[in-house]
Image (cartoon, rainbow, N blue to C red; front, side, top):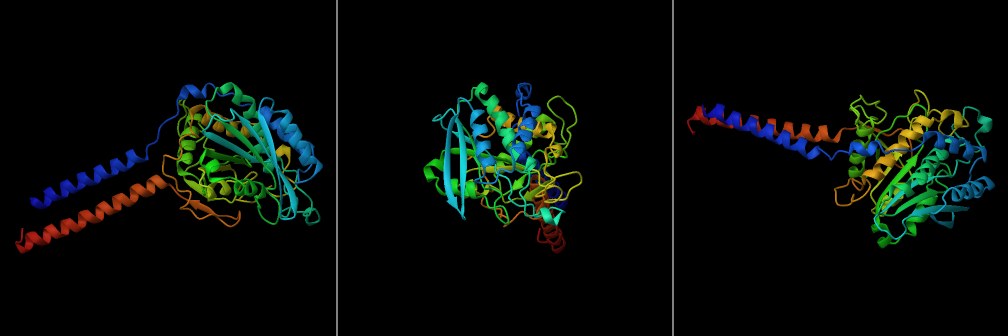
Length: 382
């Protein structure tokens, strides 16, 4: 009798522990009314991609690079514009910043690199490998998203500061050099870093065959909120705000190690994530396909993909998802930063893993206690 009673109590305890772990994993949901307000325009962004590529490769220090910065500034009327020039690794680079609501506090950074790679080392044509890439996806797509967001942000009536950060020399050198982001971070005081609520990097998101997943290192709270955003928009596999089945372009069952501009704000303690698609082209493997080739052209970029990512970030701004991140736990410093962008896929589902560990621990405890009670009963010690 006592053995059955002990088993029942322990099973109820295990069920309670499992339920508690599920409650802990729950996150707040997005107000579906905000989804109806979204107006990011993928066609506008796609036209920006074509315009940027038409300027030529935007290699640091080139005429095309300067022309693009001038074009960006002309499209940001009413924004507070600044530039910073740095000399690093034998080149001169220029970072460009545009701020809305300067001085309002609770700054959110939205970032994208505007430079293009000076070589195409992965191109199938060996004679073209020393030539700069067009950079429609790897460069222009992120800039295009920022520019259409800049069109919308003044009408959002946000009560905090937004800074658009166009980084230079992200893709200079044998591997991703991230020189512009590094120069910015190295010149950022601790006080300035502490004033930044979050840093959202957007890179290589124009692929017509868009597939996104959390990339690491990255702030866990921000990724949880991005998961909510994608659920609401119908971009995950869950039902959207309208009740329709999601299209599944954003998955939380897979994560990737990525070395990108976001590692430098992370080094300053700023909550940061990188929204990036690392498989460029139909059925492409990670870091393969059109990546770092002369096939990175506007015809490979989709207005629909640009609009999806643009609306993710727009909803994040409208819902306040990028604010008050520091009060929640982060895993920024617990995940090793990959040394370079190779195939570093990591399959994970943190919530399911945590629940599984709890269940296994409870089962082990149950069988241990059952065995002890059984032996005690047999020996007459009970």
